[in-house]
Every structure is written in structure tokens, then in C-alpha cells.
Length: 260
Image 1: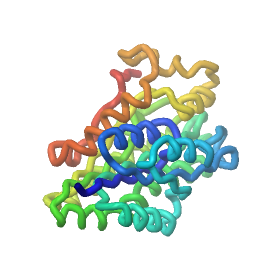
Image 2: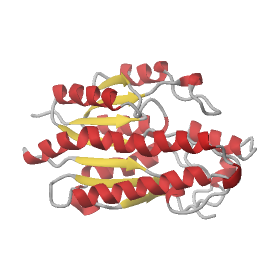
Image 3: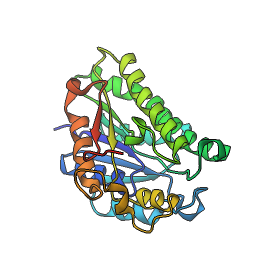
Image 4: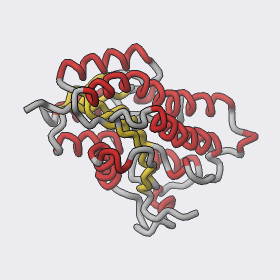
């Protein structure tokens, strides 16, 4: 039986790590990519570390960890070659992202917008550029490959003091729809998933931008009454990866009934 291979960015922790675990449980072999910048990242909170990625890879022999930044097309190309050595690339999940903000739009530093643009949007673009030719080859060989981008509730509405993040996540939604149009009828499913407040380090960082000590306050308007578990979001991402053409061009809501 041919092994199905998935490639996941932003994989060392949070939603990305939960997606890796879900896909492994579904029978995939996963190339798990993360920048592993840790405390060296130019945002106000620590990103995942090499130790986080190693712990994920060490938990099963079906995960290969790769330190690579989605802003680096060459590094992504190397990761795709590694995936191809393992088997047909059948699922790609672009989950790498950071959050920043905390000011009115007109007071937001240009560097904040640039960082978000480079990681959260161009990183997804680079991932699509690196993987789509291989996904097309998988489709031509009779497979049903998929490309899934993690967007956000912020991609569908405005959030106070997160204008740059909202703008970039709206652009991710546009990227999903544009890529889906380009791949119409070509056998590759393209979809997005937009999480609401989810219990991750990114949510803690968002709370800090708002001056909150408790990130659970950010989920008070969700019908869940509390942040989502990353595995709950990963379950929908897994569905998007495996549902096939029925979700092509869709951006699926995983917001727990989020309301402003």
C-alpha cells in the first residue's frame, strides 16, 4: 500500500502540531516544518523551538521534523524534495503564522505589518508555490491531493487593535480563493480553515497585546465560553484535507460561534 505524505508548516506546537498528530492518526507520514525561532523571533513572544519540533518528531516514526522558515523558498523546496522521497505528497497544510499589533492602525509600526505580511501571507504563498506542482503530479497519478491554509476569524471581520493582522488574514482568504480558481478541474482540492480563539501561545500573545492576563477572556463571546482546543480545530483541518472536491474553494469556519 502506498504511503500518503503530508507537509505541515508551523508544525512544532499549537494548531500545527495538533494537525500533525491528527494526520498521523489518519495514516499519513508527515514532514513537519517550523522555523523554530524561539526567543529570537522579532515579535513580542517566544515562538516554538527546535526542542518542540524534536519532541513532536520523537513521538512517532511517522513524523520527520524540518527546521525551515516559510519566508525561504529554497528551504521549502528542500522540504518538498524530502516529502517526495517518502511517497506521493497528498496533503499540505500551511499553518505557520505569527500575531502582532496592539495599536490603532495609524499608530501601527510598518515593521509590524511587514512581519505579518511576510510570514502569514507570503509564507502561505511560498508554500503553495513550492508544493502545488507536486500536488498536481499526485492528482495526475490518480490521487486526491489537497492544499489547506489556516486563515482566522480575523480574515472575515475587524478586530480592535489588530488591523494589520486582520488585513493579512483577509489576504490569506483571498489567496485560497485565487488558488482554488487556478486549480479548477485539475484534481487538487484547495480550502481554508478559519479558527476562532484557540488555546495556543498565539492566543496568549494576543491577550498580552490587549493588556489581559487571562486569554480565556478573548473567548467569552464564543458559544463554547472558552478557547477551543487545538485538536478541535485540527479535526476540521483533517476534514478539509480529506473531503475532496466538496470543499474546494471553501473557507471553513472553526470559530466556536465567535461573535464580537
